[in-house]
Structures are given as structure tokens and as C-alpha cells.
Amino acid sequence: MKKFAASAFVLAFVSLTAHAQSLPVDPDARLSLGVNVGYTASAYKADNTVGFAPQGFYDNNRWYIEGGELGFYPYKDNKHHARIGVGYDGRSFDPDDADDEIKGLDERKASVLAHASYMHITPIGGFKAKVATDVGGRHDGTAVTLSHVSRFNVDKFTIYPSFGATWRDKNYNNYYYGVTERESARTGVQAYQADDGISPFISAMVNYDMNDNIALFANQRFEWLSSAQKDSPMTDGSVESTTRLGVNYKF
Image (cartoon, rainbow, N blue to C red; front, side, top):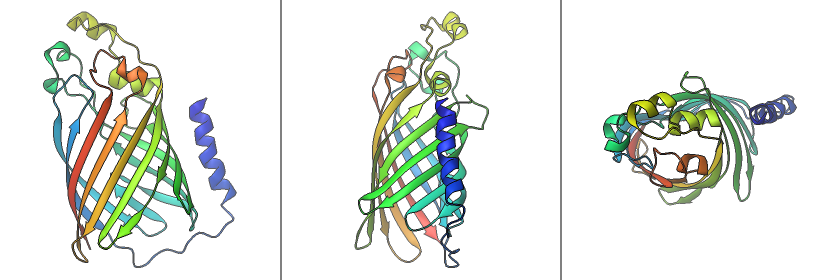
């Protein structure tokens, strides 16, 4: 029901604005491609991890690429941004990195999520609602995020602080934090069925334009686990921290 209601909200907005005038296509939009290295201090009973990932950025008011997401705008003007697209969800669990206690559990893999979102731009920042659902065949779960995003420019620096909360359904949480009866019988780890839950977060990204083509960036994100996630025998923490450093080249 929550999944249907959230999806209906976004689709209703798209329908209501279908008659309005979108921004024209930006013929001067430029593509940026880059790479980042990320350090994740996970709440799992496991080692912290380091990984590399490609990324891209592009926005011509019709099509967009933003980090690991890509899609299109059914509608976009100076105050309203409606998006539909797909994105990579990197949440995962590798038993090889886990503590001995849970090393025998099954791997939890990253997935691809389809999403729809709406952001309202105001003088005090953007207020965004986003619905995402698994299309990668991992867990068939759904997540709904409400957030606030700001932007500040200081010389060659651009700063993007953000905060909000994400509700994840029991399918999502159970895949990444649940323990099946079969796993329990094999490893001795207590079986666990995760319910849905809400996880608050804060993040900040800083972009530095070295010149017209090259930009450096840093991103820091903290997310507090929901009670459904914290109660899992797979976790021993309540906060996940991700730090990313990278470089982009603008064509």
C-alpha cells in the first residue's frame, strides 16, 4: 500500500504538470566523466571496505546522468523537477570480509533500482521525494526517501549539504539484514526476519573546479540504521559512514 501511494504521488504530479511549459533543451550541456574511491565503515560485523566506481554527470533539461543514476525529466522548470530513471544501489554483504561469527552466511549483492522523484525548489533549498524499487532481481524491495538539498558557491568551491530519511520495506531489509532458517541451521547464527524501518541520514559534497575541464570532489555521508536493521544478528553498529574522493573530467 505504501509503495502504491508513493508511486501514485509522483505519477499524479507528472500528469498535473503535463500541460505546463518545461525548460528548453540546453544545447550547451556538457558531459563529465570520472572515478571515485570510497571508504565504507559498515554496521555489519565485517571489515571496513574500500572500492572504486565510475561516475558521470550530465543534464540538458531532458536527460540526466548523476553519479550512478541516469534517466529523463517528464517535466522540469525553475521550481519543479520530476524525474524517472534507474540507479545503482551499492549496498552489499561479502562473507569473505565478515567476522568469524557470520562468515558462513550467504552473500548479499548490490542491485539496480528504478525510481521516480519530484523536487520542489524554494529560496531555502530543494525538498525532494523519491520512490525506488528493485529491478535487478535481488530482493523486490522498495525504498521511499524524503530529503532537503542545498547548494552554496564559494569561489571555485560548490557545497551540497543534504539531510533526510529513507523508509525501506521488509523485502529490502530482510534481504540485506535477515537470516534465513537455512542459514541459521548451517552457521548457528540466530534466524531473523527484518521488518520495514526508517533510516535518517546527513551528507555533504564539496566540488572544486581546478579549471574548465577538471574538478575534484569529496563526499561524506552518515546514515543511522533503523531498528529493524540494528536488531539483526549481522550488525554490531548503528551508523554507517561512507567517504568518497574523486575526480571528474568535463568534455
